[in-house]
Length: 335
Ligand code: LMR
Image 1 (spheres, rainbow, N blue to C red):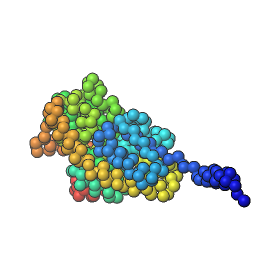
Image 2 (spheres, rainbow, N blue to C red; image 1 turned 90 degrees about the vertical axis):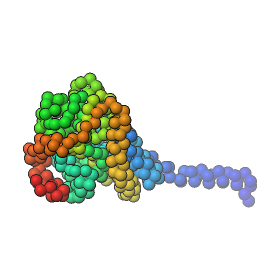
Image 3 (cartoon, protein in one colour; image 1 turned 120 degrees about the vertical axis):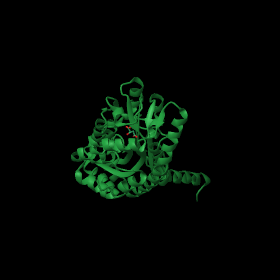
Image 4 (cartoon, protein in one colour; image 1 turned 45 degrees about the horizontal axis):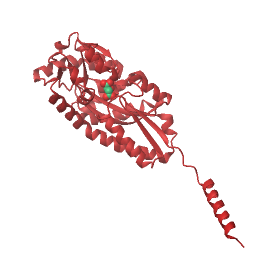
């Protein structure tokens, strides 16, 4: 017969057995998502949304650590870090894929190619966008999505109304050969600098000016060190969200499916706020009053277009004449 003591011992043993048998809770998979802009930008907010949804849909099986503002890596370093597996996710600007050997992304840098977000969507959602992402795979990278930012303004400490106003100005650019050609076509001297170095370079006069969508200009406080800006909308700046392919394909398929769902929703979110974020940033800079924002007249715009459109032909060898033609066809550009 079981005594009270032996019953208690049995109960204790059962608890012990249960705790031994219960599977130890697995450590979450960590996704380090590094980027170079402020949290309060379309990309920063998109990354935060992905973190929220990824952790929710995977019920904590995945933890996303977002590192904004070049905290972990600057532009070029972050691409190396992704390939080495030191970080798992990035959203570099489309102008920064040249060093990976996929310079075709510089298509997006062609001046006066796209006339607004509707045109952009035709490229990113169509075959051109899909083909470009596929080109990343042989590099060990998987492209998951395009995230919008916006159309660029040109800024400097002197007015920029016509191409001649750029003569001899040192202009910071991202590491894109198309942007180099663009600045040269305007008579400026392009200088590649990492994003994290731009504010100081403008402040100290290392460069005279730059180009950016308003959200980047505002959140880096560039308007405090640029007296003039022109709402030229001459080019686009946006992102491809990319992951280390081996990491992504090594994930449990159910976890990956949840992450894909989180990415699809974060993409819709990021792309739904980008225009407003840029409009708000422009309004905030106008209110700050440190920069005079200039709208081009039709005649001036025609001069900009005449100076910059030849860059398309000049750089066809780098991007591929076929790809440019495919983009023209997609956008209904006849020449
Ligand atoms: C830049 O370097 O100007 C941009 O690519 C920064 C960014 O990620 O928006």
